[in-house]
Image (cartoon, rainbow over all chains, first blue to last red; front, side):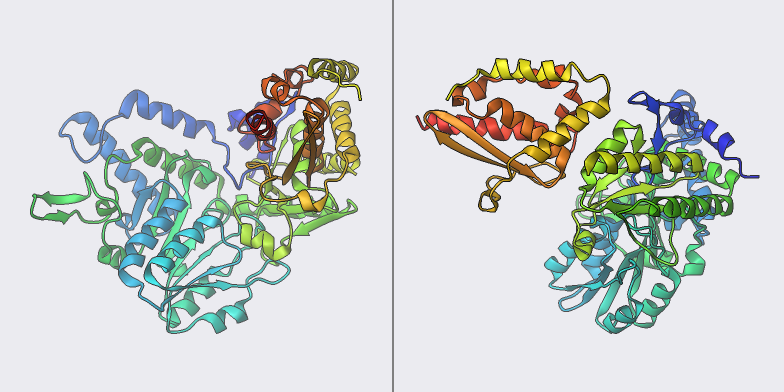
Length: 405
Length: 142
């Protein structure tokens, strides 16, 4: 049974007051709040388990190492990876993209090659590829979208060709909530001979992801957007690809032998985890995964979808409400503007009412340009949100409109 | 033309705000101020006049006449425009040295201190910096 009130009790911060009002937190696409067991696991790590990993012979080092590697296993199962070694602990999705762009990209991209992203991408899935293209004299191609915020798959098929070497798109758009047809994109790209990177920062917390069923070459996500700690994330890569890649950063732990003449590198996944990693973050991320599993992603998806439809229908009643992102397959994001009102103004009034939303470009400047707007107000939904919070948002938006018109 | 000192204008604003007992009234005042602010000529909406670090676009144009600064401002967001309007109300018509020295304590007194935080995206801090920098340039040119 999905019991949202019970879930809310798991998140201490949700009981906060903001500007004298009950906090209504709709900035979940930026970062989610943390359940008590994640917070407790973090405290427990530093109280009882703290030690460096993969180094010491002593009891605590062994304990921390075991927890660290068990966490990798738990997260590997969560996305159905073939082996835990295919998961690299990184700081977040941004670092994962940079890692692949610099390591795989620098080795495999040549002059005249093409890298494809989409109009929907977050800056972090544009800029690393752009830099790579500049360095290698390669070409960045962009999959266009339709007015509903869906990828134009016909255009995509036409853009794909033998020069396409990497296709990197998000699974779910952070600005519009569009769920992209990842499996189809991967299949088509593979047929054209390209490897595919899926930015899963907005997806693993909303829908069941199976990297092997998708056949993704690379898949990345961030811990803090899935009820886990900040500063930790995952890069999944197919073993064969990761094996063929050079280390992205160098230092301790990523080496096998070091001499002044020659250094040999460690095997996967350590080759890509130079230096002392975010041990606590890595361990605690599996606690977030266990929490999600205990609720069930199917239940979470169903609840969030119900809220998305409820909230969208309700807000549409407001005259001058303009929704951005009308994809048939959509998750957890209501991105909108009020006619003639700057998103920043709407966000400021909502904040005074204790409602947290994001306003602005959402790190997707090209996408906002595509719609010719200065940004949007974005309410993004998590498992702990309720219909009554959407009612508060509805009242808040009406009030903002009244005050600002 | 009579020129009220900065502190007197600040006191007047603080006095006006003292009649508001909730945030709605305060914001409505600021929104009205934003609406009432004279529209800045498009010719002045240049990159040099643009205040950096704001989520919404803000422009501040400075003129120097008879030893005094005249500020004009605009923004595409109305609350931001109201906030910059407050600054214009206080600092326009003042001598450069007085603008540079102004502590602008009224912002705290009217309960708008939250907008002064450097992490706030409306950049009231940046607007003040921009105005003081302008003032400073007229001081050194004299």
